[in-house]
Amino acid sequence: GSTPSSGKYSENLKAALTYILERRRVNGLIGFKDDYHYTYGHGFSMLFLSQVLGEEEDIDRRKELVDALERAVKFSVSAQTKAGGWGYVSSKSSSFDEGSTTITQVQGLRGCRNAGIEVPKKAIDLAKKYIYDCQNDDGGISYSSKSKGSSRPAITAAAVAVLYFAGRYDDPMADKAFAYARRTLPIRRSGGHHYYAHLYLAQAAYQKGGKDWSSYFPEMATWLGGQQRKDGSWVGDSVGSTYGTAIALTILQ
Image 1 (tube, rainbow, N blue to C red):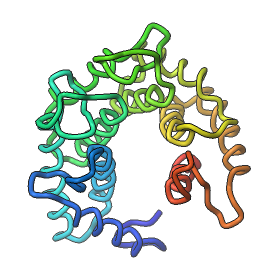
Image 2: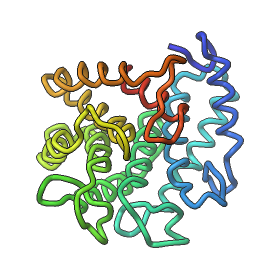
Image 3: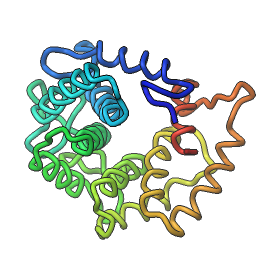
Image 4: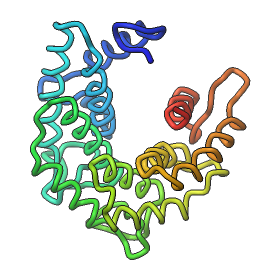
């Protein structure tokens, strides 16, 4: 319930917001040029800033947010490959693209569009086509459209969440991918990209609602309750407690 201007954690949000805004570069990238996976941070930053924009009451800070997001969108669109995906860096540096970074860009761009920032429809349509091109016969999404290989459960969950957020609720392709994700991502497990996968699967199940959500959430909440440490934190995917706690709280709320 906190925003940058009100609530128990407003000062924490302000500090996080300032940190991210200070990571802006002239070309619109939000991140570090020596980070060879910078599209991840850029996508998540767009998503965060777009959510903050709707809650920010300070006029000058709103202008700063709008400018940051407009530049960020232009950078993201320029970094998209001809196939419609994104890689770890700008397409000007590489033609490589893959599913997980594409997901972060689409969610970030969708957040910007919802916040009133202009996003070219062509970029979103091309990105959705890219996701479709990555689907295998089993319903799962492969790592990349260029080298499909076997389906990846975590990327599949992320792809479904993005498609549902884009309004594709009755899309047979999305439903087939959701069924694959539910089939291959048991709740009571750890290791690998388990927290990452359920960060997205929870979003997809919530968007679907009905029995898909009611059969998923109680079990997931119970499992997470058992994983919480005495200090209140979670350690997710062996990355660390900040990552794990943030994902667990996102799923639970």
